[in-house]
Length: 382
Image (tube, rainbow, N blue to C red; front, side):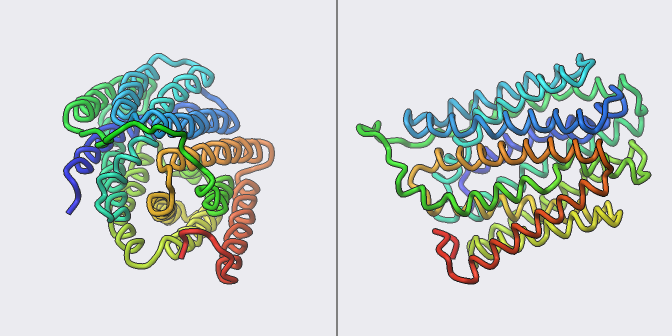
């Protein structure tokens, strides 16, 4: 059974990500085709948002462990996100979009490590299932938000005012998520404050696995680039949110199952599987299999994230700090990767950017697979 606190957190994420998908499923199109900016500018916006979203998680993870503050960070983070998304309705430049996305992602940075720590606390020894359930609710919200975006574009047209009204309406689901987080989620039951500083020496052994994951995230495309590729492949703007619906539907139906596989087998097996699927997603994109590439990217996202979060839940002594470290690493590598991807795409062409991704991903996959086959110790990855 999933603990009721994790179920409540699931609904918080559902409404938050419903609002997020109303933005993210159309924001790349808004930047490139409404604001008339290049793909390199989209890359910068993605990089800034990614870095802020993940980079500051390590700070709040450390603060959560040191000060033993959990729920306040969770509620504050959802509050910040809820009230910054609607402001995109007033944005008229890629720079202002970047600033607002950074502020909105700061909310995610504030809450994420503490939220994962809270899930781990109430997982009852079944971290794979708990994280799988939470991710399922997360992507179900994203799928619902993308469906709303499609419906609005289909019935009201793909004009600038429609884009802006969608951004403004994200306030409603954002408020619902804040109310649930504030009144229906219980805090971590700390019994006493720490009297000594926490030690990170034992957790250093987990870093090799995390760095492999970071490197893979450097090379794989952000979903924003998948969206632009879909548009340039001839798919009408109106129907692109349906690809996000498909993307999130696949995550929804696969997340809990993949979580059970992690509990039954191991994080290593699921992580290797996810890397292989990630490579296939980029290969499919290269050969214009846009729909298949969205499906494969969805499987990669939930499989790899559930595996790495479970790995930390089982092995880390200072969980919030390690979750923060995880997200900080993803921030640095993904932000740099998005910048490089955008520049290669704009300077050369999309094919060169995709080829660069495939070569890098394949190299990381081979290195990780060979090292684990040779029984080099990756702590916790059995």
